[in-house]
Image 1: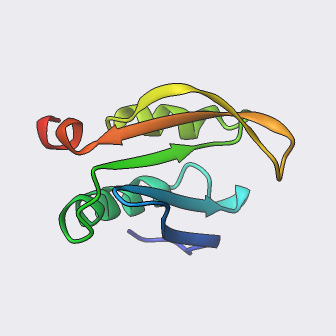
Image 2: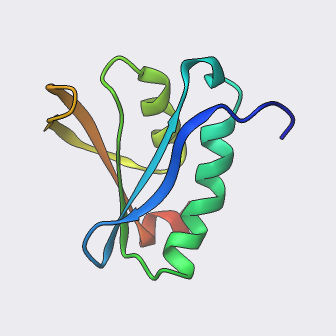
Length: 104
């Protein structure tokens, strides 16, 4: 993808097997350029294939509705809101199970 990658962090973080947490945190200036989608479309097959994850957990800042829409497009299912200590806010959370990714 053409453009300048302006990310503060982009990492696949293991939680507790068999779950995996995917974090893609982009600066506001990168919003809407497809970086999160491109990274997610590459990492989801890697997490389920190479890492053998049974599920991937994701969440987003409550004021970032675009990230929620992207997660749903990628096949994630909304699980509810959880308190996220760094922001002090309730953040929407999502889960993508291996079976969901294979069938979509």
